[in-house]
Length: 281
Image 1 (cartoon, rainbow, N blue to C red):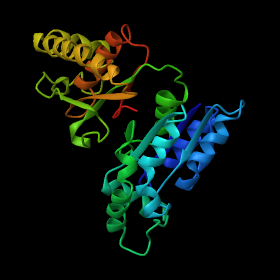
Image 2 (image 1 turned 90 degrees about the horizontal axis):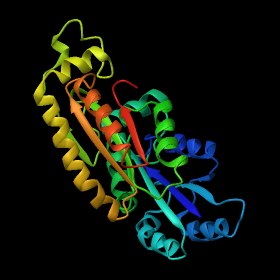
Image 3 (image 1 turned 180 degrees about the vertical axis):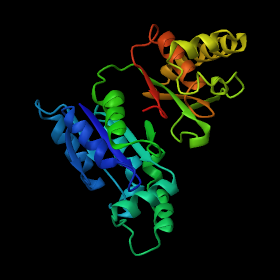
């Protein structure tokens, strides 16, 4: 049986993630008390019709129960149940904006919102530290988050590590959920060619421009050599998810090109390779 635990700070998209898994056939429950988690897992394990379940756990649990999460997780895994913990987060400015726009009340509504967010992160630290996958939803729309959950979790029956190559623009912030971040702003920038400016790193004209520069080929080859060496080591430690982020200034040309190139290369070596362009989505 597979059990997915969805957690994260309020406003980060936990309900959206659960709905995405429900669409993939998972039996989902939101806000289950942590002390009931072992009983729920055992009940699901004994059901032949429900081999995949997802549970939302958040700060509405009592603080002493949140601290017991590592012990409860160990108890569940000892029964042979496959557990995956997904932790969602976003930067403070984005969370403040979301609460302001939706006029939702934070679970700790009796204290200032910025303070409530900090307090919530502290309480969820025991779950966050156990996360198999962290997802930064700062620059992610509802539809993008649903697609990302479906791609990385919902449809994956393979035990092989899932690798996500993601492009981004530094001017929009570094992804919080990346395991590796590579800065390619040292490469020639198509942005300064007026006829290339509106295009992206997936367009033939931009590809041709970048491939005329040896430094681009050198960067690509160095990244491939590094990742080919180290991805297997992560796989050998039973890692479930790995995110490799490639960043340029705007996330439109150089990073997009390299992410496309890396994705094409590693799909010949791994079954679970995904591609995402944060600023183009």
